[in-house]
Length: 291
Ligand code: ASP
Figure 1: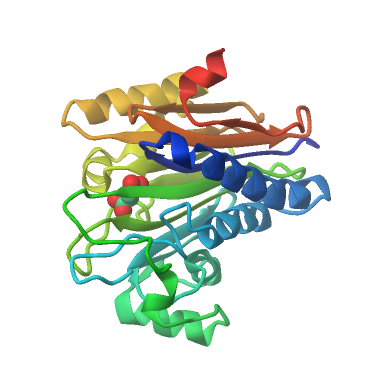
Figure 2: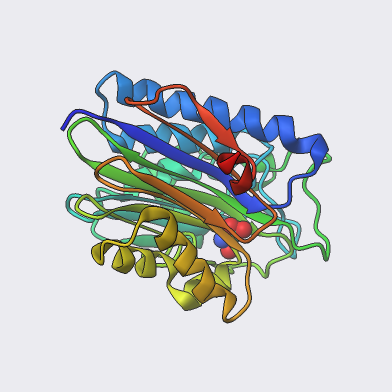
């Protein structure tokens, strides 16, 4: 096994024409951060960590710096990282004041508990060397606002490294105006993400309550085990979601480096590259990919 591949997304959402360039640029930068690691022989965990950290640092995306505000005008973040060999999962939820939530999820990967929430997540981050900050430091002045609009989205990445190892990462500020302490699909394995070296890795973005209720990531893994093609596996999950309403997008990568993505949101910022096709490809809508 010597090929590598990385797919990432910057959220299932509506992208206004004025935000298109920032979304493409942010995805390109994150892709570069991850593929540099994979091309140099680095591991899938490090690659998804680097890609998601770059997306968190970019206020274009609702994760880390630039996260939306909850009903009390505060940033609360969720993040998760999973590797597909031993099924280790590290996740944090409703966490405040962690500069890069994905760093705390990475540290959690080594721990027995799967998910740590709230104040415990902040304390864990501080004790394990993930940079902490004031909660308000994650809200760029003039950008985030509470309101009835319910802005949301998430960032995520799936990587396959040259050793055939896979990893999946996700990070989100959740849904604008959410109640304090609310946790969506993103840090819950089988809902917002999953990873299995034998089947593949998947990450979703979208309406977290709906995604969790339908266990979308689990549905995709089941479809992969039935040899369903990657695009069809994500599409079938979205069809299931549509039975209860809800907007989402998902990205998928298989151990053979095949990728798939689909969305029922108007846009879904997606980027990918592999050792076979290293030129970055970036789409803001699936139908661009078909052109
Ligand atoms: N799934 C995220 C959440 O519910 C938000 C999103 O991806 O739009 O927290």
